Length: 332
Image 1 (tube, rainbow, N blue to C red):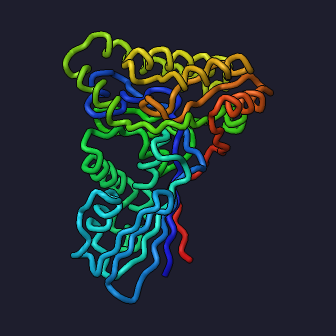
Image 2 (spheres, rainbow, N blue to C red):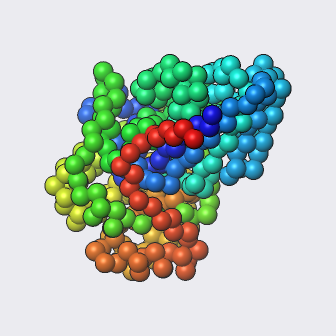
């Protein structure tokens, strides 16, 4: 038997960082707006006739082998995958191969997409013991173990469910609202560009979180404004008001840059400036910042010009479609 499980990555449009527990508890009606994209992660499991465990990451060019599950040590190499295999405890040997289609450190939630796809494949292999919501809980906990800092909430839901979502962060749990918007119109105005510099979300987010917990008023106020921007963006997307949506992406970026001097870089600023001169309305970094990808909102008909200019300036444009579906399992 061969099992394949694929999960999308995401572009966060507004409300990032505030999705980290317990930050959202201090901001009433906190939410994050993001959309799933088809540049995701794929996990493939092939059942073996023996007890041997073979794990391979194609994009990282790494491989681990063990004679049995008991011999699969919790090493730094491919630690997320080894932890998940040891958690699910398959009865038989497996060849487990992964591939993530976005650059490492892109700010698109690639590690979470991979996490969800591995969980989905292993859960199916071991009898579908866990529901989709329970898988999200397992994925969050193991990701926190691997990265060593608290995880945000937002990345797990587009990977699991797809689409354009408002993710409400409430006292009684996370509520996902699928937004009825002009998906294709939004897709035709967004440009995604990789800056070429990897980033680690734990660094910026952990710094911001500590300062918030320590009572820094400026951090609290900026996150409160970021939350309010997300609330306004939800309405703009539902109303299909692209002019307002573009303005709000810029508003989010202005407040996000003020959270930390490490959010933006010279390369990010150069790319955004060049894009604005070619028809982009606004732009923001994806994820925590410090590198990775930027997303740009363009004037109607100017997307091609913006993409061409970004590539001239050393950016790598990532072609994508908004993913209507989330985690999907295929049996071959």
